[in-house]
Length: 275
Image 1 (cartoon, rainbow, N blue to C red):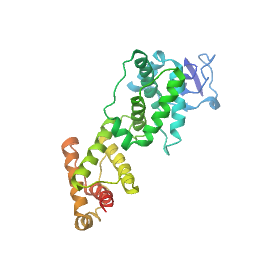
Image 2: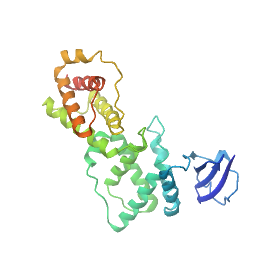
Image 3: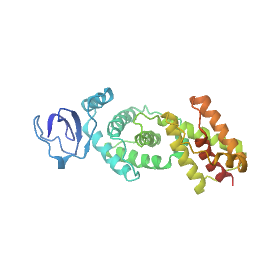
Image 4: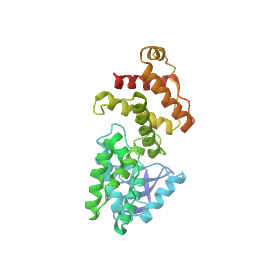
């Protein structure tokens, strides 16, 4: 049985679910709802994590400071964005993005906008998130009748990158920087122009994105399969040499030693780009 403890706004309720506090979201779910009311499950659109952790308490406090309209537009953005992902975006995105959009609108009204130094990198290596960010920025601008800067699409993209990570505390900025730095290493070591419109290059970027996520989450492990390592070393020495350069960068910058299995996959993708 889910019982209302407090109405947070027209779209959000603090409830008790078998002695565990949770936040429920559903447009209009909080309208004229009183404490003690039994919640109809059909009206629930999203169920959020129990309010036991410090971050969860922070999310709860946001409902006191941020108007419900920002949670509503963020919910619409999430529904729109989710269509482009096969896995479910982290539920905390509703809170982190709502908070960001609230302050983004406030900054825009005072002309105190924030420039994102990784705009070029996001547009190049995280095209899907950026394109969603552009649509989301326009949704917010129209909802609140305000002009938002171009970089706001990049800020939203960073929230999407974090929300699509397996680790809710992922560092999207660090991931983007890793992808960009590795691409620089590849271009330098190969020493020739790379066609960035090929399928092989796009697959390489996709691999780097997951690789960067594993690095920032300190989740690099060996799968124990090193069968192709020696073959790549023999038949694709340049690709392996580039992979070693990436290994040295990761070791120096992030203090992580890449196993042969990671070097093998990097070399496979790099060899396809070279050939």
